[in-house]
Length: 179
Image (cartoon, rainbow, N blue to C red):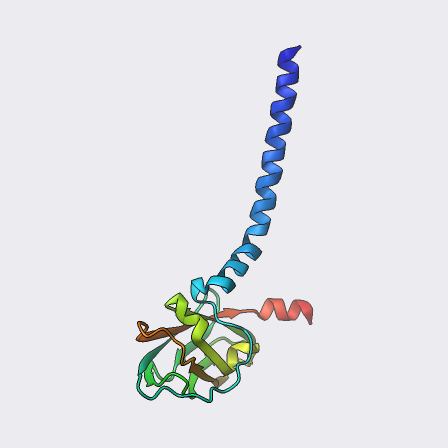
């Protein structure tokens, strides 16, 4: 009889472990998002519009690099119109990205930004950004997508280069599902 009770206890324990692992896996993404927001790790920028900086540190120059790529099935050409520029922290700058729908159908894109080094994301402020909105393009249509930004003058002095990378995702199916 002791074996039957031991087996039931083992099965119950294993079921609880599986349920706990599932729960942890389910909670991992939101926990990771909170962790990244707090620490600035993973280069995630704020999705909020920033106010224009009023203080410019003209004694310091930081290089800002721009990278653009399309993910998977996105049938677009997408690239920065300027690959790098030098800015003074606090100075508002405007750049543009080029996008062209290479497919025969209308598609909708959404750009997700990432900043490297990760700590730099805390100091990269977007005043206006095409990434705040979905970008619909008709078949063969092209567009110039604008970005206005500044680096906070409190950017740590050991950061000399900040890289802003956009990955463009095809969200056409998701938009038409809501539609």
